[in-house]
Structure formats: C-alpha cells, structure tokens
Image (cartoon, rainbow, N blue to C red; front, side, top):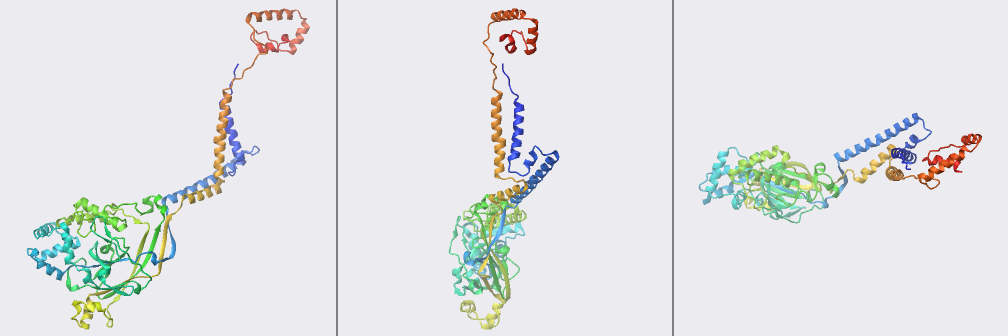
Amino acid sequence: MTTKRDPMKKKLYSMKKLSKEFADNTSMHGLKFIAQDEATLAERILWIALFMVGLLFAVVFSWNLWENWKQSPVLITIQTANYPIKNYHFPTVTICSVNKVSTRALGEWMSTEKTKSLKLNEIRRILEIMSTNRVENEEEVAKLSQLLFQANISSNDEGYEKLMNHLSPNCSEMVMHCSWEGKEEDCANIFESEATDDGFCCSFNSIIIRRDAHSNTRKELRYAKTSGVYAGLTVLLNAEIADYNVTSSSISGFKVSIQDPKDFARTGRIGFLASPGSQVDAAVNGQTQIGDDQLRTIDLNKRLCTTNQEINLKYFEDYTGPYCQLDCLVTHFLDDCLCVPYYYPVPARLPVCNLSSYPCLERATERVVKNASSCDCPDVCTTVWYRNEISSGTFPNSVWEYPPTVIERPEFRDLSTEELIVYAKENFVKLNVYLKSDSGMCYIMKERTTWTDFISAAGGLLGLGFGFSILSAAELFYFFLVRWFYYWYQSKRQDQMIIKVRPSYPLINTRKQMQRKSNRVNFADSLSPTYKAWNRHRHTESWDLFDQPNLIRSWVDY
C-alpha cells in the first residue's frame, strides 16, 4: 500500500516557518517584535506601522537623492582663488579698424588698367557689400557681380581675399608702436593679419588659422610673468580718419576683442570700442575651469560642456565653442549657398562665394540667428575665461613724449610738435592690455555624486529608516532563497516516497487460506461460550479473508 503527503500543506508550512525564523534573527529593526509568540495583536499592529514608517522614510529620501543626482549631475566648486597666472597663456588681443577700405589704396587701385570699366561709386558699393555682408537690393548685387566678372575679378584663386587685403588698412600702418613687458618690440613681429567675423584684423598672441586644409600656425604663445600695466601689452594705434572710405560701423576708431588664443576671434560681435583721442586700459582677470576626467560618463545634455576629442568638427581640427559655431555656420552656407565668404579661415578646397551669392549668405545668417538651436555648441569643460575691466581717458596730454618710432615715421616727419598733437588727439589710440592680479580663480568641474557617494548616502538613509544594510540583504537572500530552496527540495523528495507496510507472514494461495479458515472456525466452535465472550472483549476479531492486518491482531494466530 502507498500513501502521499500533502505538498501544498508542506510548502505553506515552510514559508511561514521561514518568515518567522527571518523575523526572529534579522538585523532589521522591529521585525522580531512582530514575530514574537507572546505579542498581542495591538503590539503587532504598532510595530508593523513603525516599520512601514521607517521604510517609507528611507525610500522617499533615497528617491529624492537619486532624482537630484540625475537632474543636476555636475558640481562646480572653487579649487583655489590663487591660481598662478603662469599656468595659462596671456590672452589674444585682436584689433579691427572700422575702416575696411583705405581711400589712398583705393585711389591707387582705381588707376590700374583692370578697373577702367568700373566707376568709383560702383566699386565703393561692391566693397561695402563685401565688407559688411549687408544687401539691400538683390538686383543691384547681380549687376555689380557682373561688373566684377567683366573686370576679371572673381572669387576663384583667392581673388576677393587679395583684393580686400590690398585695399584695407594693413597692420603695419594701423599699429605704430608696440611694447611687451615694458620693452619696445617690432609690431610686425608680434602682430599678424587674422580672419575674424569682422574681416581681416590684427592679432597678438594667437594661433592663426590658415585656409589650408585643417592647418594652422602653431607658435610659442606668451605668458605674463606678473600683473600690471608694465607687464602687459601696450600699443599705439593710428585710426587715419581722413583715409576712411568704407566702414563697418558708424563710429571712428577700433574694435578690440580679448579671448583665449585657441578661440576664433569674434571681434565684430563681442569687441569693445577704442575711440581716437583716448587711452583705453583693459585689466584682464583670468579664470580657469578644469574638467574632471569622469565627466565623460555623464550625458552631454546634462553636463553642458564637452571633453577632449568628444565632438569632431568638419572643417577645423581643435574643438572650441566659437570654432564650433563657425563650423556650423559654414555648414549652413554650404547647404544653402554652396559657398563660404572669402575671409572665413576654412580649408582652401571649399568654394568661395562670388558677389551674387551674398544675398543668400545674408538669408542663411538670419535663419541661424533666429534658430539658435540649429548650432548646438557646448563650451569646453577645461577652458580659460578672460574677464575685462575697461577704463578710458583723454589721450594724449600736452606733455606726453612721443616714442621715436612714431616721430620718425614718414607721415609725421614734416609735422611740427603742435601739428602732431592735434593729429594725435584726432587719430591716436593708446591701448593697454594687462593682467589685473598675479593669481586668478580656478574652478573644478566634477560629478556632483559618484556611485560611491550615492551608495554611502542611500545606505545611511536605509540604515536610519529601518536598519537595512548589506548584511540585511544577505539575510534576505539566505532565508528566502537558500533555505526556501532547501525546504522545497526536501518536500519534493518526501512527496515522492512510497511507504510500504510488510505483512507478518508470507502470503499463501487462496485454497490453503480457505482450508486454514475452515480449521479456525471448527476450532472456535469447540470452545466454550464463556471463553469466546471474554476473548471478544480483549481483541478485535475479523474473519475477512483479505483483511490481513485485522487477521494478524486476532487471537487465532497465537
């Protein structure tokens, strides 16, 4: 005969037993009071409520910690307020004259054979469009473009660039006197012509981007040894107002921008003014930001800055925010107009726009300005900012001594002292650019919360709320997985066992069994009635042929 145990009853009993064992032995707070045998219902309800409050507290505050980490994963802190100036370059100084065409140079050019078919008002209008990119009448532009083509002046082979370089004021005429750290230097050696968003300008201490494919002029950049006027750059500029012909602004003088040497000069957009008859001092504060290497693990849209070689530009090697914007603008120009302006420092393989394409350039620029999101250009995480404090005063005074390099210039040799002073008040600008302090601010940009910080903070909250720890997790694993599996395995084995009940003697065939029964009946009938009654009282008698257990218990077998 076989019997089977109830598996559901065994499993339910095992889970109940495991839960009680876990509550009695766990390190989490309050559970052992819930599982105590002598605890009343009210006590159990109280401790369950307290446990749930602690659990809710820990979960809510841990979730808030997680949300803060995900929404604001970057933290910028001050590393030091005394970051030495020797650790970053002296800034690039870019000077642009508002005069884009020299009257003297234009007169010389108009006297050549190439321009005999052009009228002065026509060429001035052409140069104005090329210098400012402002178009009022597209039909006029188409006509003027045809005149340039007839004069054999085209945008191919750097024709426009050579023309504007020939007609615009050059750096040697504009920058008359230079000194660095109080020592006079040749301006031709420290200033170079550079392409900017305001045309070609004169730059000091910059990395000049050429029109060769992905190339630039790498040179040793200058550092300031200390702060103050006499440890920086001093230049004397000549506006030559009488030589103005085509200007990019309604004022006289210059636009000056100060930026990182690796940035594209946006003098037309962010430059400050330096008017004739004044001395302009630019006291510069350098501020450095250093990005941590682990920032790459954070999504770019959340950290809002880029690390080294994370974003590649199409037309420039090194990534900076200004060059990214220029790269984006060039891409829009090529998509819409199939060309770029002549003064953009892009690879020479790109086509240069002729005059008829300038209306298209103006429309493309307006679309980019209106839809700023089309050029997504985050700043670099590790960078240097230069904050300027601008001050100015009247220049020169009556006793200022002019440098010999100025007095000896051919255009001033025949002027008397009084005439030179009058000319200087109308045309000269003295510009001082220097570092204001021997040290600057240095910021460190890093992850607000690392995984170690988050686990530590969340672990503290879970421990404070209901005593949860790594060991608590191990207890849960042990009781509800390891031990449960053990009980389940044992229960499954027991459910499959067959319990066999062996008889007291070997089974006999039916004929012999019938004979033995007949003999037992005859023998029982020969007993006295009194003895049979007494025997029935002591034993349970069964004469069922197949009920062997009852037969075993009968007095007949003895």
